[in-house]
Image (cartoon, rainbow over all chains, first blue to last red; front, top):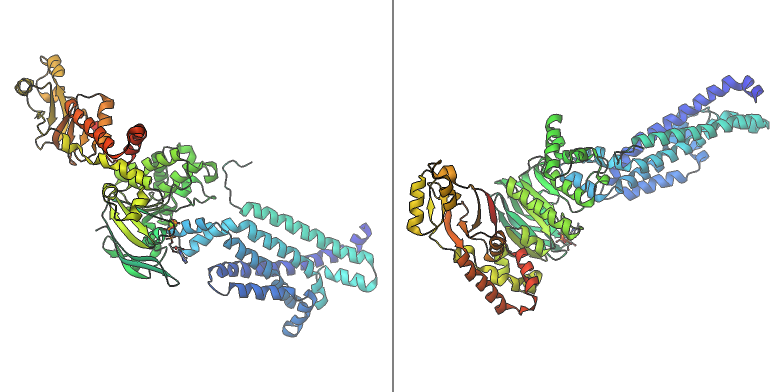
Length: 211
Length: 401
Ligand SMILES: Nc1ncnc2c1ncn2[C@@H]1O[C@H](COP(=O)(O)OP(=O)(O)OP(=O)(O)O)[C@@H](O)[C@H]1O
Ligand SMILES: [Mg+2]
């Protein structure tokens, strides 16, 4: 173990950084696109079902196939990986945003509108805060997927901890396989824990007694 | 006219939810919409603040076409109490109350001041401003829901079954609260209810609706006396109709017109002389235009004869009086309960128009009992009496005259 770190420590850190970078950007873009899109869907009279359906279909394409499909368009490297993972991250966030906003107590939306809030004010001040737990659980799900699948991105030359794993598989080296996969698991757990903290922080309080 | 609704209709997929609705509302009126479920009450109300757009017809608020107004701005100036209270669970009571003022960009100071004013109005401690809705009882939340609709000085308040799921006692106290608020602040209220008792108690005019159409628009008294058709009769209920009958007689019909009065500027000697002439022991005090100001009786004059000079010095300013057009049923009880020998009667402007004496009470009681015996069997007379109090709208005030 100590041996492994002495030998591969620098490389491990670098790959970890790549991993965080790729999954972070994918997830970030996913949030940036899926949350507003999900909100938009709740304002549409028709077509929201179709869009959710399309996103669901994209989700069923095998991860490796989707990654491979990116190569003719974007070549190899980090860019195609980020695009593919971004597409993957969309659905859980989109669906949860849509359901979360849709699920806000109708009388609150009615009150917001009736008090004279604009559509935008109603979203920002009432609907989004109330939907935080649902939206955040979508983001957490996406985060876990994206971190796991970023390991596959090594296949199309994106780098990341997947490099260790695939090298290990090629060379029958268990230490490399574990050296790559354990950090992925730890990273996924850590990110989920951090997002959990964020969720608590974002969820509005509804009682004055903070325990 | 404050609010004019003309030929309003709302069609949902070929079915008319509201069909040619017409109503003119004067400032300060308390209008109750009543009708069976699905009769279009909510739909009509929600067209006023553009929560719904009419399929046809026009709405004018203070002469301006509501349908051409910016709906967001419009809603900020119309108070709206929604059926399920709809307090924001993630905002403190303070923020809930000042929701509209905040949208109107009031200063923090002004908002805070208003929040305090409002919480006082609903008789809750100021500390409650920092609480969240979940920390209030259902009735308290509904109070907040009501003042939220007042906090930005809205002149027109729409209330959709605001006291739906409440126990009768809380409900009644909230009704009193809203009625008092409306009368004190001169708000115009449109109020949807299922409950005829509520409508009879609160409304200045009742709008009876059925299947999207207006069946009758009338004051509570008129509705009780002349229900437009069987539907309205059923809505009122036979019991109430019977109860309503003997209470038609007003104070004005049984009072004596010759109340002896004097102005405050006159001397005690003059007062005494007047008492002697008219053979009375009490004089009502009115100003030059006949507005009731108080009374003075022989004991007060006797007691102060050497120290005071004018009626003004000795008169009692707190005087119990009743309105000429209030209904005797209610009034009798008040007079008897207080044990007054006689009670002045005033018109809407508080101008003295007559007096009800203990002697005339005999007639009143006789009339009341006789009227009752005539219309219902006598067995349940105590219960009947309670019912009557509810439906009569006698206003008896006592206060500084
Ligand atoms: N969005 C809608 N789409 C189709 N029909 C509707 C819609 N909203 C209301 N209606 C219909 O319009 C009619 C009037 O409804 P409304 O809500 O105004 O009744 P209401 O008098 O308020 O009833 P309640 O006392 O039950 O609240 C009903 O028949 C209802 O089914
Ligand atoms: Mg309704």
